[in-house]
Length: 376
Image (cartoon, rainbow, N blue to C red; front, side):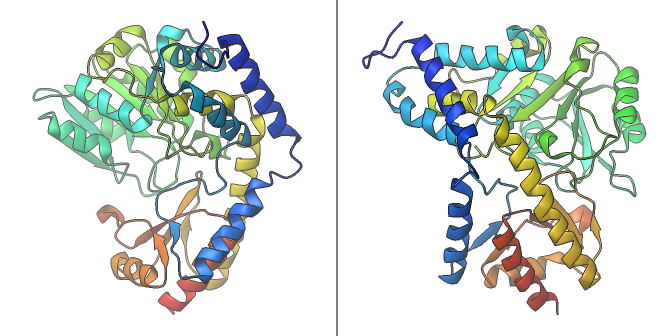
């Protein structure tokens, strides 16, 4: 099948491959210094240094940018066959069938679909406190009871207490690594929870920050979807792939769960630019490895500076971190913003902690300068 410019499906696939090859040949990702320089210019001009939304400041893969440029000529088409190709790519990558993959308008849509499909007036949602709150809002809109279970003292999901709370629950949400704490719940505990959970209770594990994890005490549970029909695993292209503005995510689960979720979904909710960029990103292994390395290097720099200042923080397994201010965080957040550094919102369960995205080295230098000035 061809569109008006005469690019066939096979030819378009070759174009994506060329883009990925081009990306790997770039000596140091020239896009990155440009972004870093832009950060410095914005700071110098009084612009905001944004460290509030766990975004990837290095930008998408050059291959993704190339694919999107080529994709302009596809804008008149519905994304049908290209969505199918992305699903095929994801199925192959994760060693599942295409029928086990559902695309979403970011993983945020996946969370909403799960809340609509598996909670209700007689089916509660159980999740941690604090964690990513969006699914709680969706469940409440669906007239569901929402049960919050505090994290453990070392910031793990308290899966034993969550198991007790999950009796008659329609859905349990586990964000691993967790947002906002950037902490992980150990793999053995997650496996034990899945083995004990009622088959009638769906367990949604959100792996948005999977690529940034550095500890061996964590594992993706995607392979466990073979053993647990009630397991859904959500992933996103917003973080390590730096496509937050494009909105593309997916989940892996069994066909029945996907059918129930699809009933709640708008047709063609993922746009064609996001799809072609996602396909190209998957072909560019350097996007992941360089993203991991840069995040780790800058994070260690911030750790060292905070250690010198005597501030405690939760060890991070993501592209953000939580710093214990030893005081109420909201005035500090406001003061940082007055100095053109925007950090994360407050989380009532951890009212003395400030969440900060790990940005580029220049961004974090700006953050630390401002932080020293504000906290004294």
